[in-house]
Length: 237
Image (cartoon, rainbow, N blue to C red; front, side, top):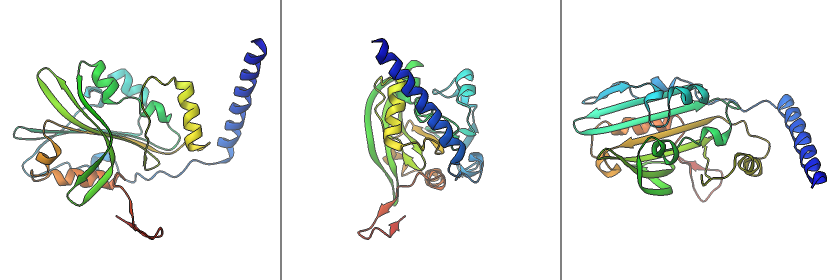
């Protein structure tokens, strides 16, 4: 057993030194976010009341968690029109700023539930289509608290691609090894965590003027799905 432990320790040390050398000589990818999120997401919509809240006021965060997550940019903007409520939460990290698993760990499945919400429904990687706009497949859930419920869509983008994994108690060390298996040594892509929640269904929101502008802002930050034709050289947006 002692020899096995020594072997594991030596392997981890060599791996750590190898990663340090890799990171020292290979620069991270360039960031794609060119404008602040507060400008990209609509600040004014005809007929809507819009309010920005502190990230610590969201179900995902507390003041301590928000500080620890160390965002490079973040937005929690609430849109209200009559009885309709839409909340848009976006967190952004530049390349290499945060662990993939840590950045994507604060989903409604964990943080909302810990904050007293009940998960009523959950679907994984489902299509999200608004008119002719097709976003990347979304995680979806219905969460309730104090007699009200929210339909919640959320995405974790890593280098522009959805980061899909089941958060079912995988230990952090094992999760990190799985990340290396999936992405190789390039664990320094930029990341977005995006959450769109509403007391209305998506079909209901499609009928409300102004909601399309919110969806288009998500396209602008790279959430639109690429649809490829039969020719691999041509991508239809």
